[in-house]
Length: 92
Image 1 (tube, rainbow, N blue to C red):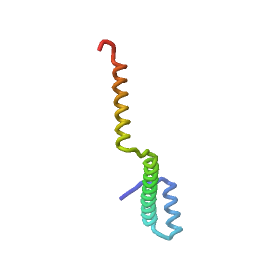
Image 2: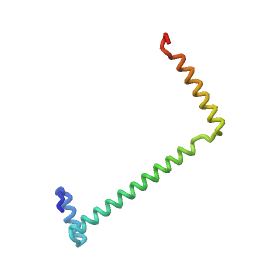
Image 3: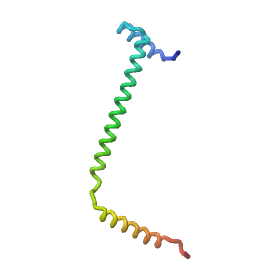
Image 4: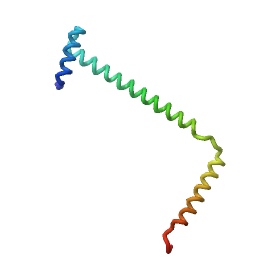
C-alpha cells in the first residue's frame, strides 16, 4: 500500500519516529488510531449537545389539554377558511 504525504508531514513522522524510537509505520498507525478516537469523541459530544438542546426545547413546549389543542386547531381552520374567501379571485 502506498500513500503520498506532504513534506511537512513526512518530517513530522520522521521526527516522531526518532523521538519515540519506533518505526515510522507504528507512528502513522498510532496517529490514525488517535485521529479516529478523536473523531468519535467529538461526534459523541456533538450528539450529546444536540440531545441537550432538544430536551431544552421540549421543556419549553406549553402543556395543554387535548381540548385546548382542538379548540386552537378549530380556530386556525376557521380563520383559514375566512381568509380563502376574502382572497378568492373576482368572478368566482
